[in-house]
Image (cartoon, rainbow, N blue to C red):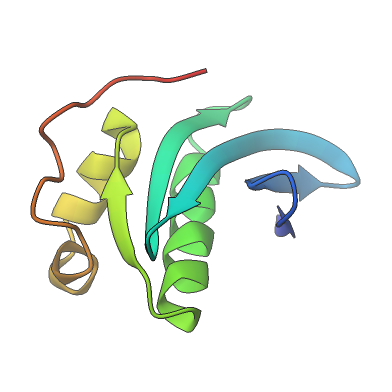
Length: 99
């Protein structure tokens, strides 16, 4: 599986054998990356988590905090101490799947 960033479109894509198997949408404002939607087209392969980790890595590389609005991304971040430290103070207050 490979993840690719579309920085202009503010999204990550996951591919396997050149076929899209998932995507993650985000927004950046005031040095905060908000993860608004994560979707894996296949289950049980770690696609969603790989997309969230790609977004986390991108935010870390750019010195941003993360505000997971997507409930799945929020859950992934809560399970890891390092990721949890990157969340904004208001993370989890308005969880919703925004597509």
